[in-house]
Amino acid sequence: MKVKNKLRLGFGFLFIVVLFFGATAVYYIHDISENSKVILQNNYESLSFARQMRGVLDNNDFPLNNSAINKFNIYLEQQETNITEPGEAFLTHRLRIDFRLLMATPEISVQRETARNIRKILSDIENLNMQAIIRKDNKARASVTNATLFLGLVGGFTFLVLFSFSVNFPGFISKPLNTLLIGIRAIGLKNYKQRIHFDKNDEFAEVANAFNDMAERLDEWENSNLSKIMSSKLRIETIIEQMHEAIIGVNEKQELLFVNTAAMKILNLNAQKIEGASADDIAKNNELFRYIINEGSNIKPLKIVVDGKDSYFQMESREINVPNISSDKKQALTFAKNSAGKVYTLRNITEFKERDEAKTNFIATISHELKTPISSIKMSLKLLKDERVGHINTEQQQLLEHINDDNDRLLKITSELLELSQVETGNIQLNFVPVQPQEIVDYAITSVKFQAEQKGVKLEVVNDSELPQVNVDVEKTAWVLVNFLSNALRYSAEKSKVIISTIKKGNEVEFSVKDLGKGIDEQYQKRLFDRYFQVPTDGQNKSGSGLGLAISKDFIEAQNGRIWLKSAIGEGSTFGFSLPSA
Image (cartoon, rainbow, N blue to C red; front, side, top):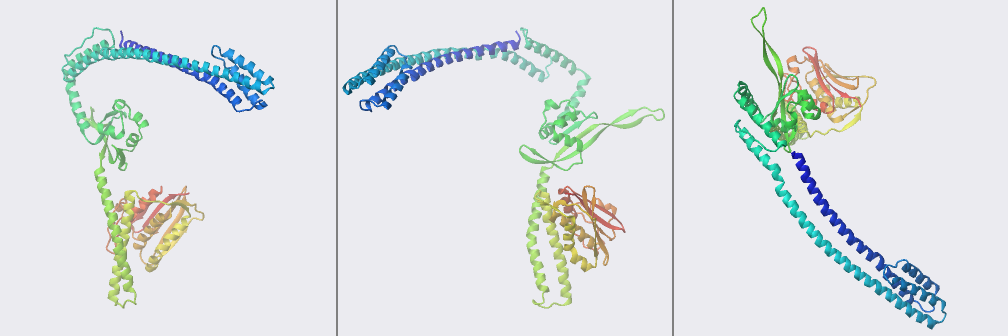
């Protein structure tokens, strides 16, 4: 018999036993319920009617008034429709006769005598129903006792049957499985001579035949040359599997070659589902996998939750090239390389990220602490310049000017460091509001107007006639424009000009600042928006912290904009950014 049929018979037997026990319990519970229902519905109602009729006689004087007669008649009619016990119909009929006599007799003495007879009949009805209640209660108790005894016997029998079944039936399954387990363990120890046999003709016999066939083929495989190749392959796969970094291999047909345990854990992949699967099929149901395959190494560090903790990974991809040797009539051999797929590696940089965050927090703390003494120095410089404090000579005035310039530079650097720490920690707060581009330009020009006047630089504004509003953080956007203007003024010659342009291009509004300085060498332009990078100077202009443009880029990109630079030696520089129109 097949194992499937054995299981069906076994569970079918269990179902019949449980169904039998349930049906028996339901039958006896229903019987008890019916007996109790009869007691409550019939006899209690008769007692209630008799009590109500006696109350009418006891609470009213003779002769009875119409209200009392109507009440008595109502309860009597209800009693007449609720006759359930032997003899109750006779007593109820007598009650009706006496009630009619009571209503027909005008004499009070006769009425009282009739009322006594009615009370006696009501007492007989009550006694009759009370005896019925006691009798039915005893019957119900007996039913409960019998049901309890019978259910106990049935339950005990059912328990013995189920216990015997649970002890004996698993042996039909466990014994063949134990035999198979012994054989599999022997194969695991490379004992390919192991064979198993079952006498019965069922699925286990088929499994045994398949096992024996597998063992025979493994024995042949072990002695073949291909076994050595596969052993080498297995060693390589074992090395990849034991690596802590997540590694994914894809061939030229976009089929998965290997995915180690670390990668499956990070990407939440199932080993059984990815074996031999297509990378495109897996990417359809796994957004992170699709992102890695499509982006390759051109992505920023990824933040992934692993074991309930935020972890950071740097993606690296490398092309797999294998030599392709082909013959050529002109050359003895022609060597070429063909792509055999790609290897993607997720390098865990959580430790470095945590250190970077610690550095950022340290910079933020130090910058915040430095702002107070620097501001205090600035206030002291203002007091020294005040003639009410005292007069100073020309040399002292020059020294104060130098101190003031350096103090302003330190204050600007600490402010930029604070802004940078907000960007790096993700604490940057943007307050988006619709605003006219001209308002941002006016705000920036007002901030640098005094600096431009001191250097004699003309600020020229060029705007389109009709500009749409932009939905931006006004303060952060104006900060970027002020930074552009400050840099332009720093590198502009005296009596020159700086052009501020605001134009509409498609669905964007473009802000740009053009100076007429000496320009920026092309080799520095790609790195100009990197943090802490400074273009080498000739000593005429003091360089900044190398953070302003980096922070500007973060501010603009956080608002779904883009930032750019155009410059050439001798032609000046143009810094600009574009923001989507509202």
